[in-house]
Length: 487
Figure 1 (tube, helix red, strand yellow):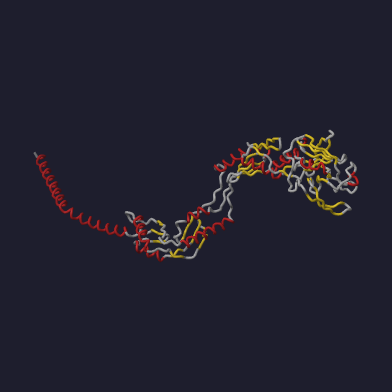
Figure 2: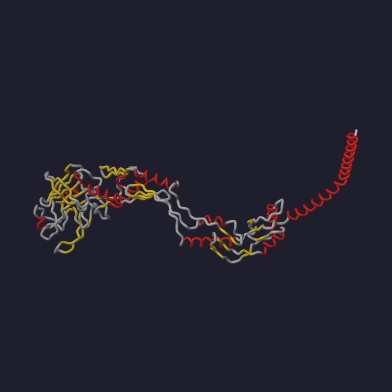
């Protein structure tokens, strides 16, 4: 019974307390909206004002072309940029390389839209103190100033590079028959092109800081080096068929080329010393210039007659270059193009002749002892006749050796001199010289002594006097550039 009473009291008290709380909450709810609405309005108005201000002004640490425009609106920023000057100071890393003359930035009212756009782009939701430097090129560019600065920076960098260590590219060379790849070496020279490219776009920054960029060497694993190595490998696998007259020499690069290099444009350069030795060997084996010809006379006897005007040789230097170029370009077969000799213009004769020990089958044979000539065409005797050669007692003998017919002329006037008799001028019907000194075949209508020993005391001035009745036949069967064998 007491518990119930007490319980009732307690219950009643609890109910009263809860009732009061409910009443207080209802009262608070009735006053709460007005309080928060007022605060919210104040906050919103404040945010609008702040955001409106910030939407039209640069953040605190914003720079344009190195000029601090923090807190300024677009109009104020333009005014400051218009009155600001460029110091035209350029650093590469920590090194000042240029301190140029101060210049105006050249901003005008036409640049206001671009500045407004920057204001918009740098806008953040909350105020920011983050530093940022924008680059803005004025609509009216001073091209002359830009070019002047560009040239000054380039010249300064090039001057600095002269005293700086240059990088060394990896190279590929053929040395003593082996392909060797050298290691690259880093340097300290500035990469001028890249630094100038970095400078572009910063022309209107008062103090320009360029990050150092250095010329990088070509490394050993670079594709260029691999290609150069492949080029030399291809070279060593090449051969050239060198045909001299009727002989072919197989020239192998692996045997003849010991040293070579490859340029950046993939052109191979060969050390031709071994090639020269080989061409000289070929020349010594086959050339006839200033050598003795083995000759079989009309009687069948075999004699040795020295080549004088007649004969040929390879120009070893020029032919070595020709073969070298063939190896470099990959040409597989070549023939000589540089033939020299004792001709008037150092030309050689007889290169295309391989029969009869290089004399061929068409030639003139002159025997001083027999005072007779024999003319052969394609191996067949076409005419033989007695002649009178140079006067022996005065040393005007017809010159022995293998010569060639220089040219033919009909008629002709001969001018010269006899020992002890002075100069002469005489007309002949046919003239075919074979020495540069003026010896040759011609008719001699004035001669009465045609005996076999007339040459001893009554010979010519060195020419081969031929009977007028036979001279036309002799003349017709003499061929220009064909050999004349005199013994």
